[in-house]
Length: 215
Ligand SMILES: [Zn+2]
Image (cartoon, rainbow, N blue to C red):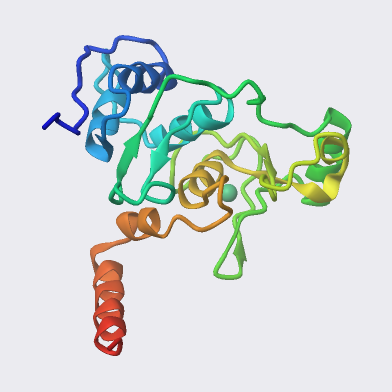
């Protein structure tokens, strides 16, 4: 039987994370790639730095470059943290990520007092351009978040301030990692994976109870 598993045939020395992931998938069409392999391929070949945003680069291969990359969500034979590019075909309709016009972006920023609008547990992030992110480090640069990326109105959305909000870089990554643009569902597995040991135990207990109650 043919091996279903992807192999890292690199070294992948492309400069960008996206290009390295793309080369890896193209070397492994129809094969099952794991999260660990993608992390390895994403790691900077020069500095050895492991990026946090590889998941975002992966979804850009879908949205910007038009590749099909399957996960357990759309292919039952795949497990969580497994991915597959079935073929090298690219949808011609794939377009660059939509952006607000600069006039709209100005309105969005002023509506939110030039601060990150991410809300968690009732608390707004509130970081502004030039701040040092106390959690992620680095200088904050606010960028537009399209609130409902799956209801695209390419004609009107770029001019409609109510469709956008400003996010800091950390919260852009958080939304991309934990929110599936294609389905509009929370990426529950990714959330649990990134949770603390203690939170994972709470989830584990919950699931044990849940399945015990299920006949
Ligand atoms: Zn933020």
